[in-house]
Length: 228
Image (cartoon, rainbow, N blue to C red):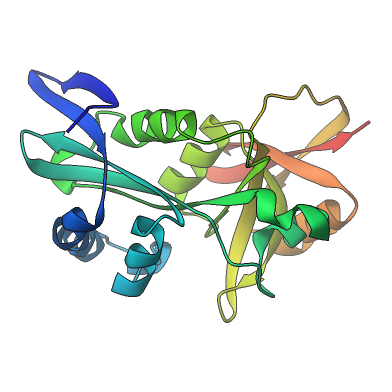
């Protein structure tokens, strides 16, 4: 199978390939390994077999990193159904444009291969596969204090557009990004404790966007900026 990317994890060569239905058993196996290894399992919303099948049947895209024939990481994009929970609405996308939204879905890296920046490499490779003629926006949700996933989204230039209850009452940041690069102009900025949900929600309702996070005096802050 053709590789989308080849590289090394230390001395170990690996490659990234498109995933298909035939890979479903090893995808689910890796998801179980990753989920069971998490100290806080609430940070990951595992996908069901039906959700994986939906993506693999052409409603999105999945790529996987392999060491020889062992799947060590995967990442998915989903072309979502337009329902009441659609993230595009949370990000101010017009109703007529919701079909041009893709979701960044689950991203899993084997515990044996953490620390090599695989998640960032997979993000770069999968975003290069996006058809920018069909899709204008990428959206995603992340639980507050899921630091690795938050870093992943901010490192891609994604911004927080909302902080609200999703998935039957779970508090989530809603991130978005345009598929084509755009230069935004901001007039002012402020930092807010990640734990201060009320202040963040107020700023977001006033049109501010969360642009980065940082650690200060052992507490996590989110920087918010107001657009001109």
